[in-house]
Image 1 (cartoon, rainbow, N blue to C red):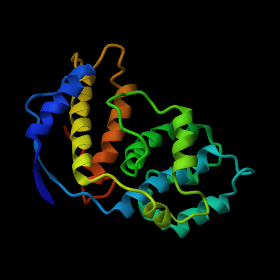
Image 2 (cartoon, rainbow, N blue to C red):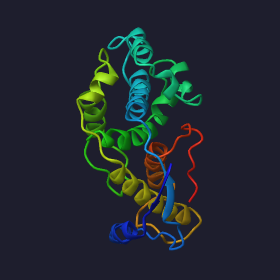
Image 3 (cartoon, rainbow, N blue to C red):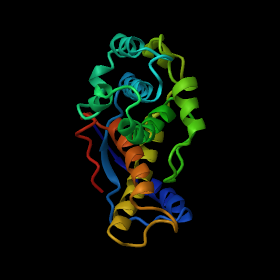
Image 4 (cartoon, helix red, strand yellow):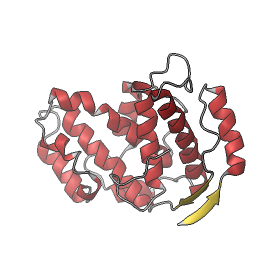
Length: 223
């Protein structure tokens, strides 16, 4: 772990937050202990989410159970699927409850994909639309028969400085969201602190996990 001082970066982050209508607590600490985890772990977490998405959203006659399970096994993705997420793999393909809840995993996946060059993260609580999701999981990510490690080697990942800045931005956004959930006016007009706030939360989860050495479930999301 290394200690970083983000006092200068906070000036730019404050401009971004203010221009988008977010107000975070001025007392938030700007000295953090961070460690960018190995890129193979980031790649495998991204593709573990892809496997869950395929299981839930693609009909078995279009993509067999075996194809998805082989993709998981061949790329050692089991270690990057949480116990809670095993719910998706244990559900029947096309289960409506799973379909209704899998969208939150899209928001987890986006920062992981952006690390490998998939667009930019915007300070927004808008959920990912279908076109972006299709591009991410079906065009950008490794194909179902490919090696995640080979896929990763073909891409140029972001450096730690970029990830630290993005994580701190979403840390500040997350603080504004939590304050709004308590009734304060700290988010833009027409921003739903629960729904749109959940999008911020899920993106922040992925970014903070990328800069830690703990499991996904143990990621510190305090603000």
